[in-house]
Image 1 (spheres, rainbow, N blue to C red):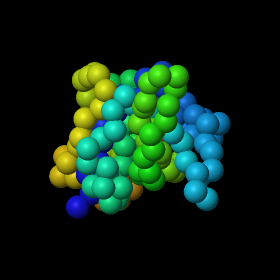
Image 2 (cartoon, rainbow, N blue to C red):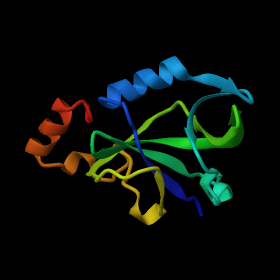
Image 3 (cartoon, rainbow, N blue to C red):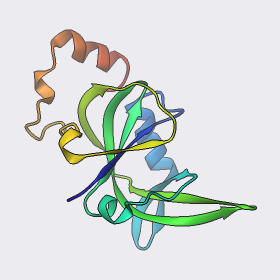
Length: 141
């Protein structure tokens, strides 16, 4: 069963800025286009994350998009080692959920993950005033 991860999209102003980041920072890794993000420690449950898991991004306090995991690697910067999480550049919008800030990342069980928009998960069920506010923030299209 896949396992997911939550992480703050630090520096992202909107969903559009996330899309630009994917387009500008993407690279080819083992024949696949990916984006990479670093963390200090390698997750202990990488096999579960690679079994269909995604990194769910929190943009400006709203969980609104995910990117499927492609791989993990250890990289060295000077004396320090880091984990590089490799993600698909194909971002999938999800039903927006407010989330409080936290440091680092957190595991996310599949049953707690928001549904993808357009997947029958309820993206059209948002109250009009909430959908308008999310659009004004650039989080919802």
